Every structure is written in C-alpha cells, then in structure tokens.
Image (cartoon, rainbow, N blue to C red):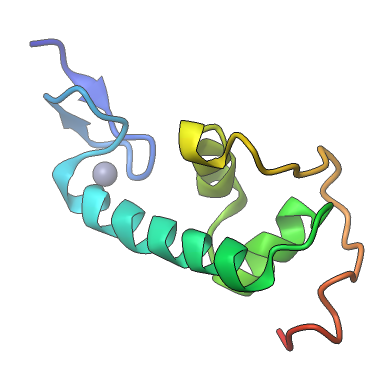
Length: 92
Ligand SMILES: [Zn+2]
C-alpha cells in the first residue's frame, strides 16, 4: 500500500483516507460540529471565515470538508470576508 501524508498533521501513514488515525478523530469531531452548524444556523451566503470563527475549524480543514459530497448542496461564496450576516442570529 502506498504511503500517504496526513493533510492535518503531515505524518505519513498507510490508508486510503485523507488523514492519519490520530487526526481521524479530530476530523469526526470537526465534521459533527460543521453539520450541527449547518443544521442550526445555516444562512445562505454565510462566508467561510464566519463558519470558521463560529465552529473553530481552521480554514484549511473547512475547505477540505466543504469539498465533500455531503456538503455539495450548500452554497458558500468564495470570498473570505466577514459579512456579518451571522451577527444577531448567533453570538460568536
Ligand atoms: Zn494526522
């Protein structure tokens, strides 16, 4: 099996996934936070930086998750600017 480099911590490992065993748990936790965010607070056009600020997920990881099939129906503008549309709806 080909060695892959973990996209989170850079460690080498052998598996057909994006991250190593250690980071897999962190990914699972982040993904459940992200799903919870969309379930509770989804607002069309919310920016990545706002999602990142609210969930604590890094921009790099967030970009990776948003490429997943399960989030393909969600529209996130490419711009990273704070739009402030979450203000008033939830307190950061
Ligand atoms: Zn890792």
